[in-house]
Image 1 (cartoon, helix red, strand yellow):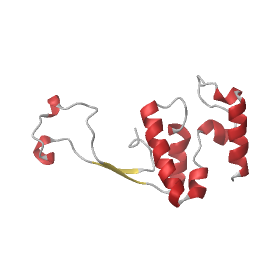
Image 2 (cartoon, helix red, strand yellow):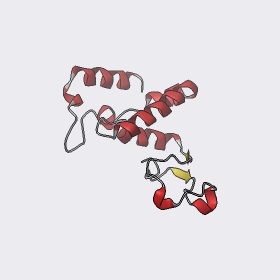
Image 3 (cartoon, rainbow, N blue to C red):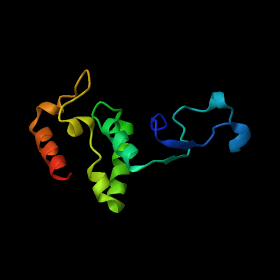
Image 4 (spheres, rainbow, N blue to C red):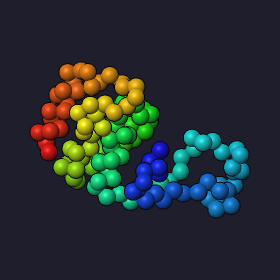
Amino acid sequence: MLVRHVHAQPFVSTSRPDIDGKQIPREEQKKIDPVNMRLFLNAQEIINISKVRLCNKAESVTRNIWKNVIEELSKIEPELAAACVPNCIYKGFCPEIKSCGIAETELFDLKRIDYINNL
């Protein structure tokens, strides 16, 4: 999910049993088993990731993880966290082929105004 972003430098731990010491063959491991990951990001990449990962069309697990990241970021860099919005809020319209529909709501208008006022 997050390792696919172009300007993010990911460091993901291995699941190879000869390296991780778990001695569980790969074919017996589940794809949902957690692995450690670190990302080196600059401010622009955090904003770019937010545009797609905060979108209602993103997978809910991914969206919730990224919301938690932005919540933690807001404690140390509130200005940067305020710039982290879904693409529709950033652009003023939904660029998705099949929209979630939020762009046609009053909530969208309020979020867009709030975003513009915080620039």
